[in-house]
Amino acid sequence: MSRAGRQEAGAVIVAAARTPITARGRALASMTAHELAGVALAEVARRAGARPEQVVLGSSLGDGGNLGRRAALVAGFGVGCPGWTVDAQCGSSLVALQQAAATVEQDGGVVAAGGAESVSGLPAERRAGGGVHQRPFTAAGFPDPDMTAAADDLAARRGIPRARQEAFARRSHALARRHAAGNRTARDRTAGDRTAGDRTAGDRTEDPAPVAPLGGIVDDGPRRLTPALTSRFRPVRAEPGASVTPATAARPADGAAALLLMPAARARALGLAGVRVRGRALIGADPALPGIAAAPAAAQVLAATGTRLEDLAAVEIVEAYAAQALACLDALGLGAGDPRVDADGGALALGHPWGASPAVAATHLVHRLATAPAGTRGLIACAIGGGMGAALLVEAVDGREGLCGVDMDS
Image (cartoon, rainbow, N blue to C red; front, side, top):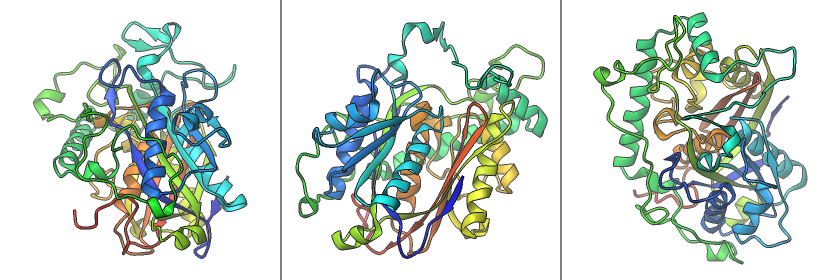
């Protein structure tokens, strides 16, 4: 599936926010997935001064029932706001964002999209010691590898040595730490547990920067990694040739992110800038090598929109594993050290709230383009367990005004 957006119309993302990302069992462990999502949803509505008419969220776990509906209620959007939930494993929130864009393009209105995971709330039957029992991602008769085994296999087939994986993981941590030190995280973090209530565009309030999100809770993943430290880890798997280590695999984490979309004409009428969804792709690929599927999805949306790699100002590749991200970058012809790639760090540093990770990356992408000149393009791509890939291409529509909640002088 692929669709190129039109320059003069389409869906515009006018606000994006995320919660802190924290490890399983830590600062966000007491919050359910729908509560985490409710915080992010309420914040994007506050920033834009517009309440969504529909909510679509992605999650690979959920916390019982319909996550999208429960989060919409917690966010204060009222009983008249429907919500629904998408499960596409680690790609859940990117598929949700694609559905939201399609809904806006077809029906108009304001739609919120995103994702949430509470890995800390994982049911007991899904726990395996310190790990997680992986559910089936394919049907009987089709390959369905363990994700770490698949990453090891991909690294071996694509010639990605352990040292290169470790260097990429260190880069992710260094960029995430730089991002935090520069206080830029205030632009894409939530300011606290607020509800949208009945705010209108006239009540729009700029996001304070810096902020203390959720009572002082901050990302707990990024740290200073050295070659000596990363080389000390043993491979996760004991099989010969295994190269994935705890340093090069994203740790499971709790967190949520949300984005608010509306028709371009409505955004202009409300004086809201943002980024337009120009194209999207969702593809099927070999279930035996799920980690590489982000690359053909990205290539498809680039071709559909007539976009070259050199046209991109920002790229986000969801970093479930260093080997997986590197394989996709290699396939696309992007260098691992390209400054456009995951410039604020990725899941290797922050942690991996599974189905919410693409929404976290999309939030970073939107804010990276928030002050860019109109026409500046960015790409997000994600590999999905079971052999699928998803990608989204966006374009800044008015970088002069900036995104809701971004202080242009900061």
